[in-house]
Image (spheres, rainbow, N blue to C red):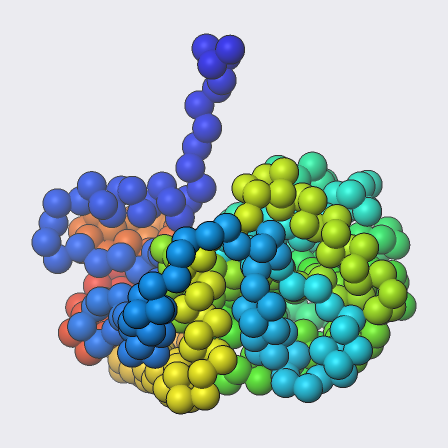
Length: 398
Ligand code: PLP
């Protein structure tokens, strides 16, 4: 049967990542993949994570199977982060959380669950969005459309067009929203725009699916969860996929969560039962290590505050790189201001560079950025910034 399989292309991020890995130039620089690297260009192991790991190993616990949904401590910690401790959603037990294989696994649990309850729904993702959104929802059997989002003129969000488009969707459609640090553009909605969106989705009976892969990388842990909290206050059904890959620098541990919020607490256990069934028939139950680290950090006050300060450090360092990049490019007089980079949030910037610019950066300088012009600002540091600025200046002025 394999003889009939046509070639399947990798998504552009993974394809460029492979090209980068095969590039033998020592000065090559990867600004493609969404990974935070520190001042020295290394992926950090956070001190809070290291301590939690040591504590975990010292306990020498047997490697039993975990519950399908994850441990109670892990699940509660995820909800505390999303909704705020002692929030009404938690006290009223209106949400079910399942440990997932990264944020992607949370999206997949959610997509499979929605296919059971809204089988004919259209899924709307932002234009542009993280490549895997469309692919993942299509793989779950949905028709996927794009709603207007990025405005190349203002380098911000086309909020009016976005709302106008969402109003045309049939009732019961699913809208995928980035809670913060929009990937790939870096442009987020304002608090007022979120409030308008809560109303709009309610009035038009649209189902919100919030992807929060960068909590703490934008403005702060609570600030970045604003969208989640506003939807929760509206007492409606919605879904959240969270990731700890970036905020704990635990990429390869594959740790995240799917949280299903219900307007009516009476349905929570049935929804959770269905989600558990989907997990059981997929990978049976989740892995231990990443979840044990996250749970230990979040439930040990000293480690929790250490983690918050380490997360704050990553956030501030990215912001400083944004400022230096924007100011340095502007000093080189490239025919337009790059100050918009400072207003964006999180790891990524839609820089305005074209596919041709990206190709020259790759071919002539070994600097890998996506053809869309997306740059991973979180991979810049004092040691490579000048080189990146010089290379961008060269390709733009050519
Ligand atoms: N959602 C968005 C918007 C992302 O950018 C990413 C990762 O890049 C994910 C989800 C997936 O995260 P994870 O690596 O935890 O699966």
